[in-house]
Length: 301
Image (cartoon, rainbow, N blue to C red; front, top):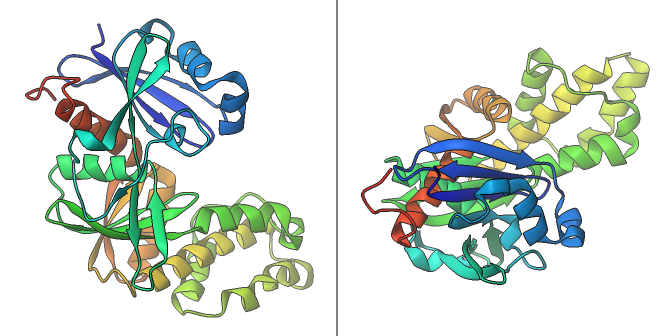
């Protein structure tokens, strides 16, 4: 018997976890549903379809379902933001007539030059990290839009974004490089070579066309070129982010395979790493906020 559902709703999929009264996840139901598809079908209809017989349980949701133009726009909270946040970050909304739920809002900060930074979904993973006892340090949350965040005494102080995953996808699918690249191979020598290029701070734009030229002139395999490009972009990210977030140990929160690539790249930069599963941290963050909102007992989980 579940006591609540905790939903991590991304830009291309959603994952609904059934949580019992002790705070333990007893099952997961997931679906690949892009946001534009959910908008056409209706977010409530998609949720009810995926949740099945869990549909009547109290619900808390994080991620892109709370973004502008999605199911319910949950506002951003300005940093510094104490984590896990109080119930004010989880906003009550009507999921459908007669059914109330909680949507977790995002976080916002301003850089030294005044430009804004935003995150949505990662704040929940960071809350989960803090709820597990990690209160200080630099955290990297790799993905489509990688976030680097500074935690100080359990507070999200500041963060920055690098569009590393998005740029890799765009370059490998929608530019002239697509003709030279294949699915990336294992994170071996080619990946390491790319990381070292990125860590050297070389002009990225001046180097990109070489991936096509080397495929044609030198006959380098497309899988190796793709692995090297992946490493190059990740190394480029670390080179720039370490100028803003000095650390000897980097906490990496994300999907296993990608987190391990970042761990490998960080090692080449002389930075040790601690890996945390992004899904686990999202659930932990939602549970922490559910407890503060009174959705599940304060002594549970």
